[in-house]
Amino acid sequence: MSKSKKNANLKKRQQEDKNFKISLSITCAILLVFVLGFFGTKYLPDLIKEWKYKASLVDFTRQESYIVDENGNKFYATNRSLEAINTDLAYGLLDGAEYRFISFMHEEGKIPEYIVRYENGQKGEVLRLENAKNITLSDFLPVSADICPSNSSYPNDYFIAHDKYLQNGKNNKNDEEYINMVFDSLTKGEEVSPPLTQKSSVWLKLKSQKYPGLYYCVVFVLDENEIAYLYDVGSGKYVLAPDKLTVRLS
Image (cartoon, helix red, strand yellow):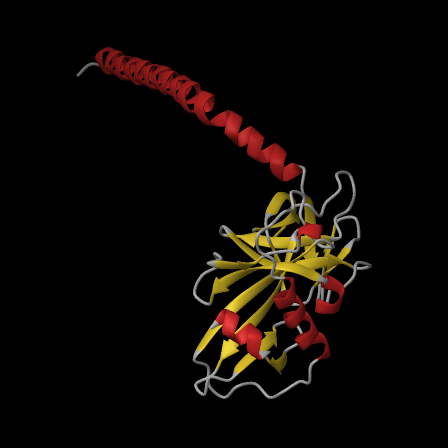
């Protein structure tokens, strides 16, 4: 094959390669425009919204006995009896978990005194700002309660508050005496050893006007000998339950 013919074939292949690259570039550009047009229009607003949401939250750092936000505010774990009734918007993030405001216990524009860990759709521990009170049952002053089976977080019964604590009032039921039994027994009663066996248990999720976003959880326990106890989860204290309360809950 002559030299001139070889050169002609080489130029032809180079031109073909060039044309292929141009065609490929155009195809990729068209595909990119399509993808951005379709997915960008559909998902970009959500991505921007998510970014803005996370940018508005404070970052926490974990220390040995507390977590601290980027402004130096320290939050400590509270009494284990405390549980948030409902959560509000998130305040900060740490290790993929949100730390949320507690409904009815946050004033906009102020650092929250109490927050709750929220992860995988579940409420976790309640934390308090460094100078906020570490709430005990004596501080809590309960006025009513949700009564929950041990295997459920949903109440199947209630201790109804006295009319003086209700907006509408005129209740046909008043369980104030039972609330007082629980409170007096655990704050004034003699501590006893825990039951060796447990036949059944019921969670009493106490409510307070003083801390409207929180439960204070105590447990009514019945052992195999039908002896009833009240257990303060936070303090670890067991007392014998009053007979009238035992009849009401058994």
